[in-house]
Length: 68
Image 1 (spheres, rainbow, N blue to C red):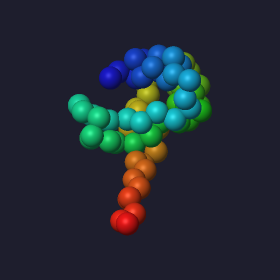
Image 2: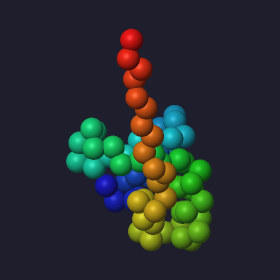
Image 3: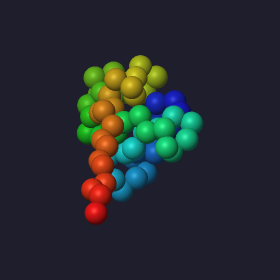
């Protein structure tokens, strides 16, 4: 998605951390924190086209289920 669309999705969400994926949900790329996005947008002078979401997102979180 273009950065402007991602910003609108983040603003419409009640959550502060958004999972990011490419093409399909099981291709998890990372986590976007809304405050990091807003800081980057401010640094870009409010121009969403100057943002690189890949540079803003945090590495993916993975957990492993414990075997019983």
